[in-house]
Structures are given as C-alpha cells and as structure tokens.
Length: 81
Image (cartoon, rainbow, N blue to C red; front, side, top):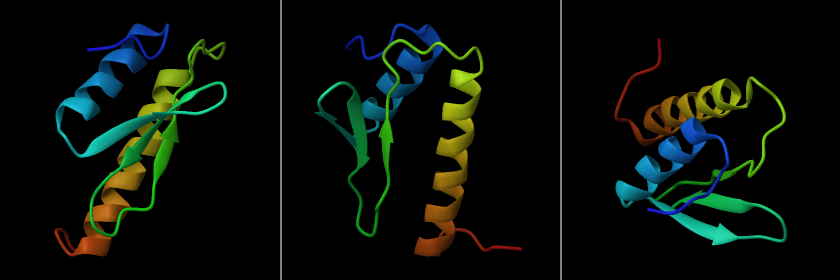
C-alpha cells in the first residue's frame, strides 16, 4: 500500500488496517491519521512517521487493542466481564 511510517511494524499494521476497509487515512499538518469509519466509531490514531521511542509499536498496538475491545463492547458484539 503506502509508506505511512519509517517503522516497518507500524507501517505493516496501518496498511493492514486500511485493507480491511473500516479505516480511512487523512493527512494532518505533520502526521497521517487513521480514522475508524464505522457507525458509532469515535476513535482516530495518529501515526508516528519517525518514532524515536523503541516501544512505539508496542504502544500503538496496545492502544489499538484497547480501542477495539471497547468498541466491540459498546456495539454489543462481545460482553464485558
């Protein structure tokens, strides 16, 4: 797809999100932004183009997983325990 980040893992994850068709990319002043385009979705992720933190991918993946869990609970797909 496209080169969104210099970190290969973040780039691969973002391109995978775009391939699902449930995420759209918009450009902001300095960073690309992934917006969730589903009914009831409110989240967007700012993609770090040149992450300096070695844990950038782990943090990005953690935030994504937390959001998806919260979204699925909100829409009633899964039940919270």
